[in-house]
Image (cartoon, rainbow, N blue to C red):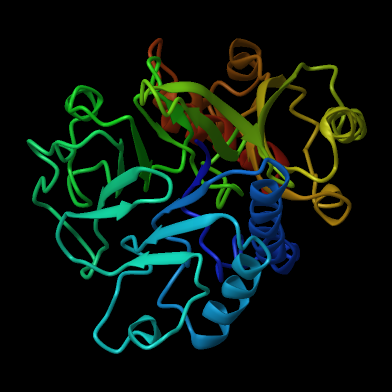
Length: 356
């Protein structure tokens, strides 16, 4: 039995909403989900599991129709969906009256229930969210039915506010596989007993690294997972990079280095640059022009001007500069204290007012 396992698609989300590429990211979410459906067809899977948060918020009727069309293109694949905390089932949800394709099972139950798929000799223990949070460990002591079938668990959670669960307990509960969602970082158990596929497209700057889906196979005779493979599918990644500077680094050189780093990895990605090191006090880094040429979510300048405080104090022993150095400088300084010293000296040196 072959399957694809995905979760946390967040259809309808606009990542980086204040950035010019936000609409492209929203479209990438939809395009990548369409690719997941295409992969289900190409790999001739029996099941497509969606472990919650297919939608970013309460789905509108048009959203349901769009994804239902995609499911109609894989009539031979059994699609099983649960609602997560973002797309929880509300009393006025369009889900209550929506008619899915015949190959789609949207699990509406609020408590763990068993769903049997006779043709595939599979049973699934699962339920959907009807509230924003689930703080009770509803899966504690959960076990599959006593029947000679492939036993699957489909659930959304993993933190104290959203279905607390013990992954070790799930691994030993007797299920052939636990298809989990909610955690956006991919995680596959070493023994293939469960997995989090993560979000297929990264949704903010904290979701670094590869993103995609899980493809697996279960032996019908042994009812054990024989293959579990992570398939990267995302169109872009959030890439954090540290750029080190010296007193010889100019603003122009820094722009070239950042452009080169992005070029090596691909301009389709979204970058967060952290600048570190000691720079020439006469040099100011202005990288605003780069933000017009590539996707930069954040630039954090942690560089420090290389002041010779002993020389400065000797030159200004009795004026405001000397007083400022004597007051703030000490052997052990926090990051905030260092910035206060550097910024203050920079301001004092740049002013043309008479100092006394």
